[in-house]
Amino acid sequence: MELKFFGAAKEVTGSCYSLITKEEKILIDCGMFQGGKEMERMNYENFDFNPKDYDVLILTHAHLDHCGRIPKLLKYGFKGKIYATKATRDLTLVILLDAAKIAAEDTYHENKRRVKEGLPERKPIYNEIDVKNAMKLFVIVEFGEDVKISKNITARFTDAGHILGSACVQMSIKDGREKKLMAFSGDLGQANAVLVKNTVPIKKAEYVLIESTYGDRLHPPVEERQRELVRIINESYKRGGKLFIPSFAIERSQEIIYSIGGFMKEGLIPKMNVYLDSPMAIKATEVFSKYPEEFNEKVRESIKKNRDPFNFPGLIKTLSVEQSKTINEISGPCIVIAGNGMCSAGRIKHHIRNGIENPKNAILFIGYQVEGSLGYWIKKGEKRVRLLGVEVEVKAKVESIDGFSAHADYIGLISWLENFNPKPKKIFVVHGNEEQSAAFSKRINKQKFVSVVPSLGDSFNL
Image (cartoon, rainbow, N blue to C red; front, side, top):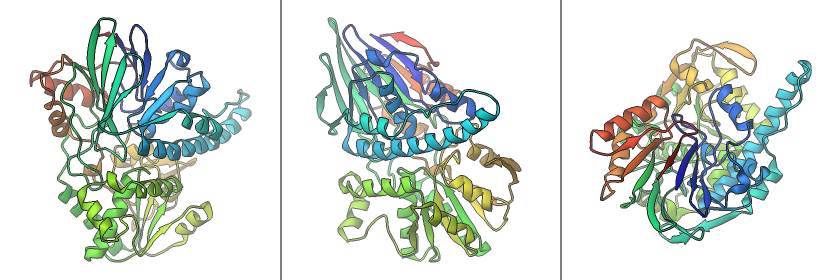
């Protein structure tokens, strides 16, 4: 049996792994590469494998770096089944339609430049029709049920506690006369998350792939990050400026809305207008509302008391571009939550362009910033940045709350591994930059695990 790494190896994005037995070929995730231009250019390159050869795709969850290249996979000949939870399927549709729209816009601007330079025009990575064709291949699975995904492979999805519908996957694989157990962590969530339930452990596997986004970092307690958010909102309000929050459309936007609504109800922050300026986040919030059973006990209790967790007086959802532009005309304090979380696309770039040179304003980062992204440079402390073709001075206050990450820190990751009994034969540390993955590998090896940090293109015979 061969395990091969086509993404998220010594890097955070582009998750894609291949598992080949004597009779089957399956993929686990097929996500987009994100970050600087060099990284994103990889999305337009040919796959390092033939999609026609694969029978099955396991999708752990709906983040773009895990599902973003699925429609491209179909364009290159994949005709197999895609196994995922129902919430993951619904969120994937929202994510991919938005990605197709952005791809069309980016290609339009790129081709204007190419025509001027006498270069051939580029086609979008995929379009809405490709997305809709991909959705026809989805097969829904339930948490905790054994699903026969092929002749010799049975999979069990367990709640990863990362985002709505996210899963860890345990696979029982018959390869000739041998039978092996594998586990894929997907992305693991923090314990006691604001919205979703805790991770459900997997207890047996010989081989394990584990993410390491925060493989050498610790998150502050939930209460501490909530206090920080209250402080930043209040200080921004006192300055009379806008608070821009670049936010991922799935989970993070809903968590921030839920938290701000609670703060206002408790009188911890002043009442003010809060703009959810992301069509994708608005649509994702509608999906969230369909799955109250997926939330943790605290949120479910709130719903029972007829409180909509994703709505409160002063929340304004701006779907159209025209509505979004009116936010620039506001002079008083307000909060603007807009995508995307790394400031590499979406409406947040326009808001930052219009507000970054005003010292009354603030930019609050609440998620991981891939190296090379606009968010990475602003968060790092660059005094001048270039966006939308213009170089601007960073005068707005820059704040950061890393604890809002939907990823487990190294204690959470180790806790997940400690559920395996006996210890796995080998652990593959993935989905982290080289430094974080190496540090986590070293840390768990000291605890008598056997781990390796694969590189892009590496293959292992198991």
